[in-house]
Structures are given as structure tokens and as C-alpha cells.
Image 1 (cartoon, rainbow, N blue to C red):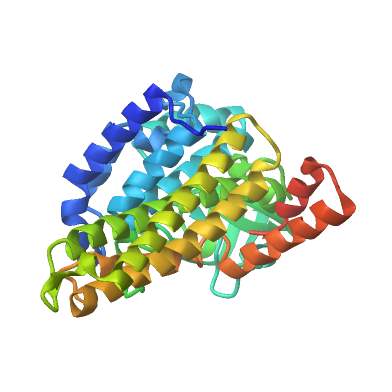
Image 2: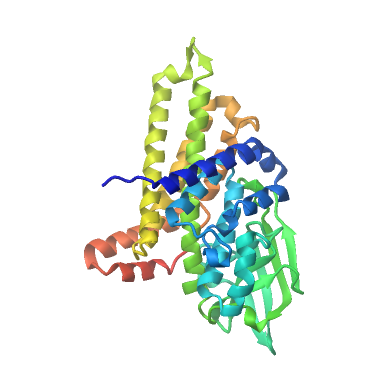
Amino acid sequence: MKIELTTQQKDAQAQFRAFVDSEVMPYANHYDQEECTPPKLIEKLAQKGYLGAILPKVVGGIGMDFITYGLLNEEIGRGCSSLRSLLTVHCMVAHAVSKWGNKSQKEYWLPKLASGEVIAAFALSEPNVGSDAKSIETTATLSGDSYVLNGQKKWITYGQIADVFLVFAQCAGKPSAFLVEKNSPGLLIKPISGMLGVRASMLAELHFRDCRIPQENVVGKLGFGFSYVASSALDYGRYSVAWGCVGIAQACLEACIQYTSQRKQFGAYLKEHQLIRQMITEMIANVKAARLLCYQAGYLKDISDPSSIIETSIAKYFASTTATKVANNAVQIHGANGCTNEYSVARYLRDAKIMEIIEGSTQIQQITIADYGYQEYMSQPTPAVISQNLLART
């Protein structure tokens, strides 16, 4: 079987790369150092239609197939992981509203999300809750015709600038999802700085202090928050991150090809030294392998195959660990230069490490994939049953 992009996908990929090469890569190190994404860059992302990538054309989106959407994430991830993380969380919320929102929510929010008129953020993580997402402590209590939220969310990507949040809270002991606008009374937003990687992603803490929102802002049904709304959104997130990791690794490879072709040691270009060539070889092979796993996951999503969920977990696991290994070797190849802000490989390494933590850590993916292996090769359940079990974890 030959895996080959269609003409339309190749054209889209070329457009994505041109956008990143001209608008993102030359400035990404500066964004990282300033810990900020310029509003004008986000506007350009919106003007290209990328914030509405996964939404149907009827609401103003592009309606990309999953392979094309993956290519978009790879290219933006190659340029700036922080900017790619905006694409990830925004599209996660857009997907959740599209799939689980009621009619009025879809009619009001989807066109705004597609155009980039509003920016959305995904608010699940808390100070005491990460991988064990079912144990969220934020609460929502029905009071008259409103829900009153109390609690705290942390490490919310682009929380500093988001216009609306998809917030997960316990309502009468049932994990549920709610849309909360940034100007809701009782919501306090505090910036987070000084993170290891994806520093331009403008993280924030959300503090809910008797935050009152309309009753109709619940997404889906009460109790659907984790098993349905969050789980399906996180599957989208893992897919986006997996492709973004391929982008990081590809950026490292390209940087090393260029650097080793220009720098000399012991009277020869670095690329002529055997151990350097070995490292480059491993980079090439692992980048290609990670990309193929992402292709597989995307293809299965496009045909609505239930096994796409586990294949996405496998792709995310391999791509994120590969990105870290490749970035580590890229810094090694660059030597002291690779430890400075003058070269992007230092940023790639810091960003790659974050990829092993978000959207299901490396260890969570290992547990999930091992469970799948035992289920598949011993009990032989149907793909649908396997997928349902996988959705129980982040």
C-alpha cells in the first residue's frame, strides 16, 4: 500500500509551509522570549481560515479532512509550538460545541469560532488534577436559572486572551461541561509565566468565585462532561499534538542539516563525521516513522474507524518521545550554540518536553497502549469496545 497525498493536500501543505516560513519562523524565538503571541499573528491565522479548519463550510469553516488538518499542525508546529497550541485548544472547543452543543450554542458560537472573531480555550486541568481528570474539584451548582461555579483551573493555554472557555466542573457529583465567557462575573484570570516550554502560549489560571453563568451554557447533558465532551475533544487534541511533534522533529532535522553543512571541526564539516551522520540518520528515520503513524491515525479518522482513537494515542506517544529525542540530539550537534537563544534548537527541546506531558502524558499513553495490546491479543473485543475503554483516560 502506497501512502500518497492528493494534489489538493500537497497544495495545502505548500501553502501552510509558505505561511509558516514567512510569518512565523523568523519571529518565533522572539515570541518565546517575550512569552507572548502578537495579536496580529493570530489575526493572520484567522484570516487564513485556520482557526476554522475543522468546522464545516456551512458555519464559515474550511471543513478540512483530517490528513490536511494534520499537515497544518505539522507546519505550524515546525514554526512555533505555542502558535500550534492555539490551533489545538481552539479547535478542541469548536469540535466540542459542534458535536455536543445545543442548537442555539451552535448557531451563536460556531461562526464566531470559525472566523476567529472569538478565541476559545479548554479549561480542564486544575492545581490538584492532571491526568486523573475525572477527579476535578471545580463545582457547578444550579441556582435559579443560572449555574454558579467555584474552583480553580490552571495551565490553561491562551487563557490570557481567550474570549470563551469550555470549563469542566462537578455538578451534583456529575462531571459536566460549561461555556464561560471571559467577562462572566466572578471569573478572575491570572497570567502564568516562566514555563519551561511553549512560552508564548499565554497560559493562565482561572479562579471561579461564585461565577454565575446562564443555565443554557451547559454543553451536552449533565454528567456528559468527561466521558463524552472532554474525551472526544482530547482525542482531537492528541491528534493535533502528535502532528505538532512531527513538526518539531522536522524543524530540528532541517536545522541540523543546515548547521552541519556550515560548521567545521577538525578540518572537516560536521556532516562528514560518522557519528554526526549516524545521528542525522536516526532523525530522518524517526521523523518519517512518526509522520506515518500520524497519517494512519488521520486516515482512520477520515473513514470514521473506531480504532482511530488508539492509533491516535500510539501516534502521540511515538511522535512526542521522538520529538524529545531528536531535539536533544539537535542541541548536542549544535554544542554550546544549541544552548543559547540565538539558535532555535534550544526552544525545540524545551517545547518537545512539554509535548510529553500535555494531552495525556507519556506514561498515560503507555498504560493506555499496553491495555489495548492485552485486550486486542487476549480477549479480542471489538474496536468499538476498545475505543470506549480508551476514552476513560486522558
